[in-house]
Amino acid sequence: MARRFVSEFLLPLVKGGALHVGRPLGTRAVERIAAGLASAPGFMAEESHSASAVELPPPELDALGELARQRRQRMTELLPVAEAPPLDEVALRLGAAVHNLLALGHPEIAGRGAEARQERIAAAATLLASAGPPRSMSEAVSRHSLLSRLPEIVRSDRTVHFWVGRRNFVGRVPPRRLTALPKLRNVRVDLVRRSWLREIGIPAVGRAAFLALNLASPLGEALDPLRLEPPLAWSRILAVLRFPALCRAVAGRALELGVGPAGEAFADALFRFASLQEPAGGMAASAEALRFAIRFLAHLIWIDLLFRAPPAATAELPRELGSELAVILTAAARTAPELVWPPDLPRSGELGRAFASRLEAMAAHVAAQNPARLDAALGIAALACERAA
Image (tube, rainbow, N blue to C red; front, side):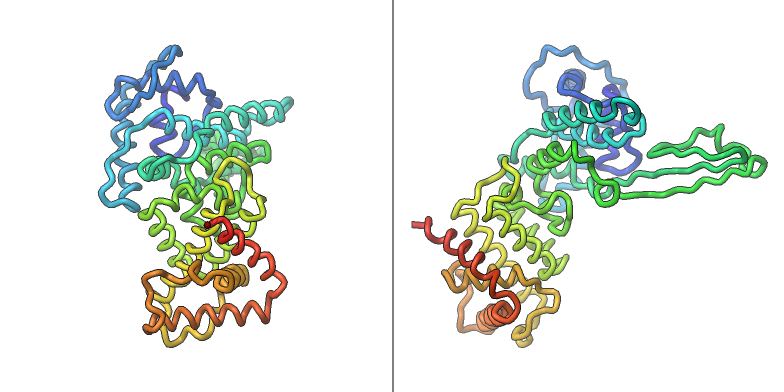
């Protein structure tokens, strides 16, 4: 697998196509791949390693250029002037972590000692994925360009029925000898495609590795707030929302999904963030972080009014508006109106009156539907303000 890792795994991970999952990879295997790519154009060597290089075939080196082009295409969806990112060792490590997570469900893992093998694979995946949050916008988008299609991964399971029985092939194509002469041997192949993340799921032993992967590349999580696993976490997504261009992209995506369901997901995550119920490793729930999160939620309401909702019809709340979003913004408006009010929005204008009307409707909704939750939200708003001085 190490000799064909770029062409048979990383490239289809970005471009689409069949992902070849082989033997699990460790840090030394990644170092050997990096050493083999060290002199290739399109690879950024970070440091020299003592590990011997893997002898790479010419197609592997050619795949580097195609991988860079495909990643640049992904990046331009967020940054129109993005340059093709070089493949570096961090990207190799993150890709190897994904490979190992997929290997956890490989049928050859099953059997005696499977639990111990899974634990070793998961430990290697966690170590590979532990790159930490992105330190710059270009780093965040570069990592995202490699991992943005993770939710699209599906596993194709086939059951081959023939005249003397049947055989199952999990994530594999049956050999031709088994499907030959279909009429004579009464061969039928049943195919079931299942989403890796939404239907199959990652085994519990791999959860730490997947959380580390999301911490290293949180942009995909921020752009998909309705995902179920792992639950949306402000401690991770704040690392990318602090960049204005990416924050605008995330807000635009929320508008596409619907400010009601997307805003509810962000608001629900804010309650977990403020109550320290998120995994360690990301940003802490400081007053500055809470202020930013509340203002982001208010911004979602504002852009919904600006681009989608007619100002004259804002007295009534959209049916899909969740109670958590209304509770958070009502509490923030009571505690410190500047937390929710856009600084450049005149209160006397048509849009200003529409925004005020939406806030009033939220407050009425909270008073009628969820007054008990308001106490917790008022605590969050107070915490966002009390350390500001």
